[in-house]
Amino acid sequence: MRLKINLASQPYEDARRFMITWSSLLGGLSVILLALVIILVRHWQNYRHMATNLQRENQVLQDLNNKQAQGLAILNEPTNKDVRDKSEFINSLIQRKEVSWTRIFVDLERLMPSHLRVLGIAPRLIGDKIMIEMLLDGDSRDKAAELARRMERSNVFRDAQIDDEAMGGGKTGQAEYHFHMSAEYVPGQNLNTSDNDKTVTESAEARGGQ
Image (cartoon, rainbow, N blue to C red; front, side, top):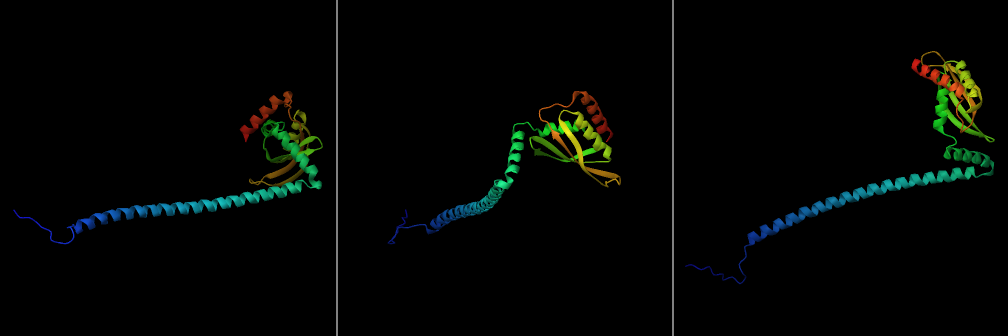
């Protein structure tokens, strides 16, 4: 039997196996460290992006607050007190549902003659009256006059009149009229029932013929 005797002053170690083991361990740790660094860098980039967006939004909000403060300062001036009070009154009516945009548009649709279109509508307070101002266009002045007559016969609008008109060329080459109309609006009323059925029928026929 042969015996292996180590006569060296240090115990025997397998250096090659040791290097392979530690190299693998260090390689794995390096991969994990690299992944952590990449994740950290991405989080840092996202943070900078979010911080930039937040700063931009804060700046926009600050600008809006400044504009609001300037607007309130203008409204609070003594010369603009009447305008502010009227605006607050109209807003309060809208908030209390006394002025319903849906109701106004429904009533106008039932009264609107054929080939006459609403381009814009806005309320205006004159004294204690709510005035509705409208921009219309159509192919003849008779349509606007007919709308004024229908509004006068209703219980919802009063003192309807054509304030201004202009004629221009339409897309099809035919004459096109633009009208500015105004009328007092009476909230909480229904259309005149004697004219409702006729108006609805005419509106339906007009929409079918357009």
